[in-house]
Every structure is written in C-alpha cells, then in structure tokens.
Length: 243
Image 1: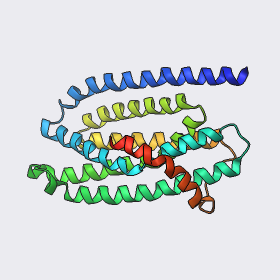
Image 2: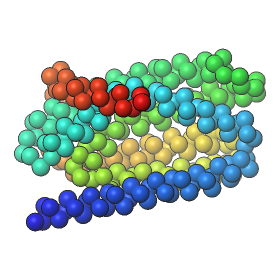
Image 3: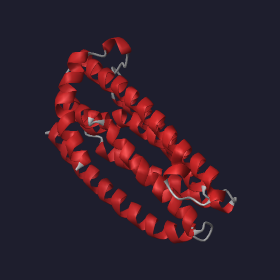
C-alpha cells in the first residue's frame, strides 16, 4: 500500500508541477517579451528568436536516445539489478556525448556562417555569430543533461524534473532583466539562457546520483547490445520528434 500510495503521490505531484511549469512559462513569456523590447529593437529580438528556432532543429540529432533510456530505465526501476542499469545508462550517456559533439560542431559551423545564411544588417553580424555560439553551448548542455532528466522521470521523480524546469524559468527571467539593465543588449538573452541551463543540468546530475547511489557511469560498461535495444525505441521516438 505504501508503494502504491507513493506512486500516486508522485504522479499527482508531477502532474500539478508540470501544469504549473507550462502556465508560468506562458505567463513569463507574455510579460518578458514586451519588457525585453524596451531595451532591444525588433531586429535584435528577432535575431535571438531566429537563433532558437534554428537550434531547435539541431535538437533532432538527439535521435530519441533519452526517450529510449527513459522507457528502459522505467522497466528496471525498483529492481535489484544495478549492473544492468549501469550498462544501460553508460551506453546512453556515451552515445549522447557523441551527439553533443556533433551538435556543437554543427552549431558552431552555423554560427560562423549565420550572417551568410540570413539577411542581417552589418552592425549585427558579429553579435549574431557570438549569440549563436553561446546558444549552441546552452543547447549542448541541455542535450547532455537529458540522460539525468530521463532517469529522474523513469524513477517517478517527474515533479523534481518539473521543479528544475521552473527554476530554469526563474533564473532566465531574473538574469535577463539584470543583464538588460546592465546594458548587455542582445547578449542578455543568450547569457541568461546559458547560465540557467548550466545550473539546472548540474542540479539534475547531483539529484540523480543521490537518488541512485549505486549508479556508475563508466565507458567500459557501454555496450553495443544495449545501444541496439535502446535504438529499437529510438526510431519511433525520432519519427515522433520530426513530425
């Protein structure tokens, strides 16, 4: 009964925090956009929005590995098989690292050629390249941290993952306001986004290892067999993401 009660409580808490996260995200966006436009012109703000849109396509390089990990880890949660979990997580982690390197390489190439791909006025071209580079690092950190987010969700800690999402919104909002007032201009948005990502990813990593003290991520545990098992789910998750 206690186990069932805890699962129900975690589910309801995850549902409520998820709804709160979505509502607060929308409300903050409705307030922050006109506030930001007091400090930036429309082309500067549009440039950052375009950067996020372009980077959104890079996240498709995830190939569904974290979704596959989440499903496989959920099946093993509560079972005394630390060796199996270590193999599964290590495989997903190092596969994800390869994806992160690919994202960084592709993103920095896009940053270098950003002014050539899009019609950006001359005085903003250098800023566009640097903002794109900062945003790429933030996206790479987000993809790297998805392994830990998947483990939290698989172990009925969705509410914790949602709380980290709320913290990310808070950090980004506060830092954006502070940096804009300091006169950082368009860099305010990219810097606030990057700092928020780094902080929440670090917290998710710490929380995961506290939740799973037997977890060991080692390269020697990575296995092609495990990757094929995860990959069977990755195909469908990737198709869903592309759609």
